[in-house]
Image 1 (cartoon, rainbow, N blue to C red):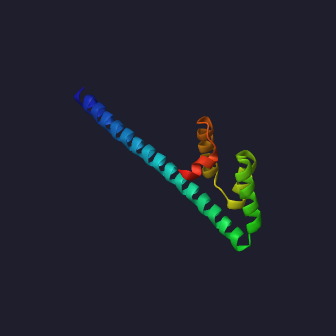
Image 2: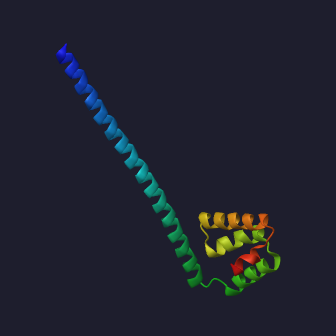
Image 3: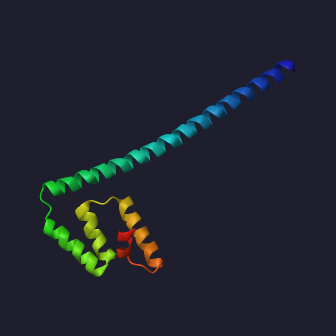
Length: 119
């Protein structure tokens, strides 16, 4: 009976060690997933910057960008102009979301985007 009890204790101790190892592996896996997500986001941002720089080097029509910006300032029409700016300036999805969120906050406060320039 003592041998069985000792074996049972040894098995419990081994089970505890295996559980700890599993938890450690799960934590490491979650950490690696988070790191991969951050690296993917950074890669997309760098890729977008590269594309924007290429557009500028290829001669992105200054007049087009200027006219687009002037139209936005005249109309304050973000929904129409954001896709244009996003394409021309290679905005990331995160940047577009930040713009939409800020715009929503400003509109709820009764202001316009033009008030943001002074902040």
